[in-house]
Structure formats: structure tokens, C-alpha cells
Length: 143
Image (cartoon, rainbow, N blue to C red; front, top):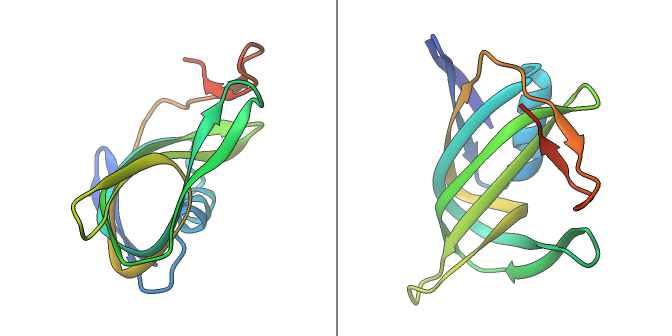
């Protein structure tokens, strides 16, 4: 993955992932490297495989829901970065398009790039903190 700062105010980056890069891991590594405490991002691209999940109210965790091991389009990726226990956490949802025109969506668990993914990430001047919500068990942003 290559990155470049493209604006100063607000601080904005372009991240370009290449064939073989893993998207979820790369986003987290970038957030840690840049010491991001709050940011939002959006992306488009193409993938060789993707694993999506959904939040199970019963188990209080993200369960795998969609696994596609084929060439697909990343039609939309949207998400945020916030701090949990002082460390950046990435939360992303994706919509994936298959060659037959069908789409699948969910919480991004893992995605392998082929040939590219272009992410625009904008840092927020306000630090965001995640705290455990007792009802859901999830770490949620608390403004």
C-alpha cells in the first residue's frame, strides 16, 4: 500500500492498495502508523476475495456471513477510525458487486486487493473514543 497526504486542512490522505494487499489489515496499520484518533474514509476498487460479517445480537460479536473467493468489485467501502483503550480501531462496511450484477454487503472482515483499491481518508480534529456498550457488548463511539 502506498499513501500520500493530499490536503492539510482537514488532513487528508490517499491510500492506494495493490494486488495482494489485505485491506482491513492495511487500514489498521495506517491508522496506527499515523497515530489517528479520529478519521473517516471511503473507497472503491476490486478484490480477488472478501469476507464480510454481520453483528449477531445473540452472540454479541461479528459473525461471518459472506465469503467470495472470486474477482469482485468493491462498489463502496465506508468507515471510521476511533480510539479504544488508547489505540486506533477501524470499523468498515462494504458493498461488493459480482459479475452477474448481484451485490453483497456487510462488516469488512478481510479483503484481498486485485488490482487496486483507492481510499480517501480524512482525519477529524476531534478525538473520538469508543466505549463498551453494556447492552450490545460492542465498542461504540461516544461523543
